[in-house]
Length: 76
Image (tube, rainbow, N blue to C red; front, top):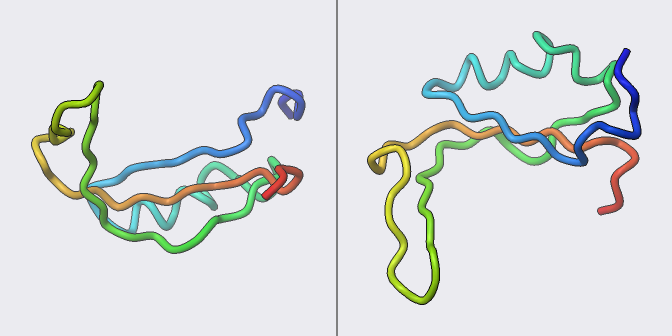
């Protein structure tokens, strides 16, 4: 098992479909690595802003399902 002190506090996975996002928790055995799922798996549109201008679409404006895993020892 990896050194827990080097694990990121949060990991977010993006998927084009719901099922792969939902299965990632089990596929990567996130519970054994000290993670829990945070919130719901929802489709989201992503944008990037750089400075005071308008944000631009990431992924050509396509929505992706997002699931975030938070390390159980992370402070909320």
